[in-house]
Length: 438
View 1 (cartoon, one colour):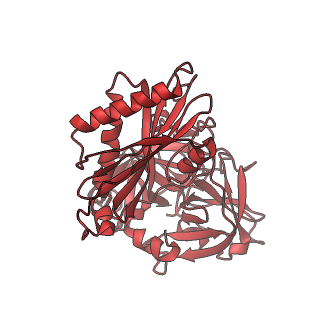
View 2 (tube, rainbow, N blue to C red; view 1 turned 90 degrees about the vertical axis):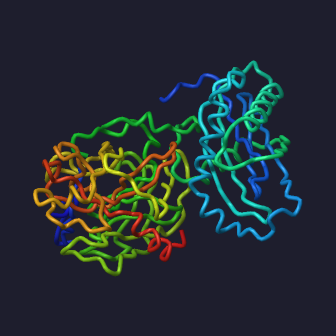
């Protein structure tokens, strides 16, 4: 059975029979924010741009210059960029460890790889590193600590990519540019203090879930609403104009002029409201089998990214989460089977379940196709439910969040041996790109 939407008058709109469901970190007193970048030779060039922010609003930009000397002119940087994706992620982790293990740089907070892009001379990596310092420390002194630690770390640290001959120079930038840098990165959750919210702040909270703890915890969550009828489905912001959702949400009404999308932790009042200008449903969506239950909705105007509205990251097609991976589902759906929609966004931690288990006779008896992903618990109790349809199932990778599933269908809500079934986003990554260019 599909998760159902909220009730509304059939005289105005036909009922949409949805397949299922609904279902601090640290308190910085004095905070300094750094963005740090290096350029080095790895057979190609890696450039990391860096910014530095202290409490009294001193900002610096770290610039570096490649030292290629004509090496490897035949390297196809686009191909290298794609094939080294995992190594670049590991590179960011290794850079963080350089500072985390250093006793002389103050308290390291976290890092973010903002952007990876091909360059004429190699590959550029834009990375943000964050530290906490007393306001009494001078900007120049902090800068020297960071440079010294980085130089020493690069000499002894075994990184996934070989790095040599780094060169650095710091120049001023302003706080707006720093904020814009973070806004340019998908999958980052921000506090009102403009500091990223780590995954560890999210605990199990939707059936047997809890209300979301704070604004900005799930900034990509949207509510799809029929004008005059209210919330029908969830959706996920994947760019400043595109929403990802379930095809079955539009089975009875595909007219974009009848729909709106809202953002924020409450349906009423919403933090942001936008009109829908276009709806794209997968060409091979099959209502009977629930296959290809995926759709896109395009907003009539761009949303402005902020602490409360942000896009999630789309996964690489090769991403594969093993069984029992911890993931989160969010939505405004009911907390009991066939119950009312919730005004406050709710969240729940669930675990991925292998398709072999989900296809057992006592579970879904062979109904789970390669384009579907099961998540929940075999004992039930925690699940999405009516009104959560179309919403996100997300996975945290080093505090960067990826959408791996779309709430699709299931038998009732939170029953034993009947976990939630989600559209497996990795299987539709190329389809999303073909429609949106993302």
